[in-house]
Length: 102
Image 1 (cartoon, rainbow, N blue to C red):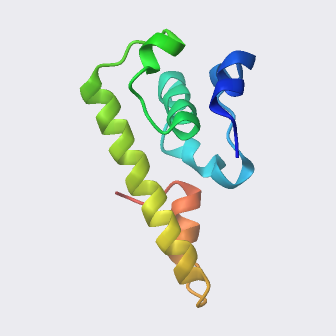
Image 2 (image 1 turned 180 degrees about the vertical axis):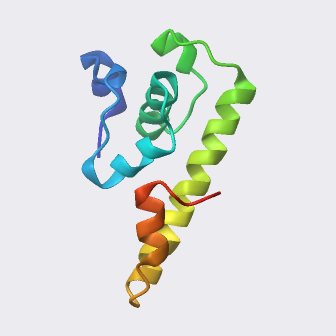
């Protein structure tokens, strides 16, 4: 588990790198601000201090939109991983390739 305070203090929160198993998210979030938001949200589990911590301005409405989009993608990915256990890899491959429509 990543310690959010250490991520913030070290400055790694500004480097939008995700673990290898979540790299597919970059196909859905292409701009720098979106990627910093995703890294921030996955680290802290909240976006309430995003603007204060990162200096990137986003409206609350836009941040809610990004959060919902991220949650839909993660939920669909989790369901696709469960389906892949039974041999159905099609949806998982489509999500990870960035071609799945939400």
